[in-house]
Figure 1: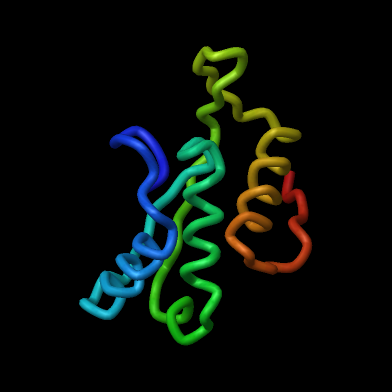
Figure 2: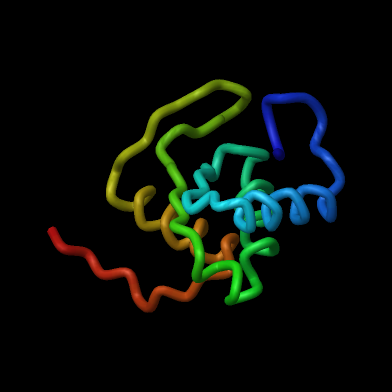
Amino acid sequence: MSAFYGPPKPEPDMINLIHHAINCGVTFLDTSDVYGPHTNEILLGKALKDVRVRDRVELGTKFGGCIVNGKREVRGDPAYVREACEGSLKRLGLDCGRIEETS
């Protein structure tokens, strides 16, 4: 909806499409911080702002693929993982409490 398949579509249309998909029984939504970049997570956050919709789906987002100076990179270092998770939660409009390191 936000990258790779032509220009981004109008946001209200995409939010309506997400709601329609959920109302038709879609229960899993997948995104990534690289889509846009970041704009698809922001779009999903807006679409899922309504708790009645958000509570009906599982949401997955990916990270690790980065574009740096126009080139693709893969990152998995602890600092980037924390940064990516916190950024995704913020863009998605989710508050899952404090992220704590386990290792």
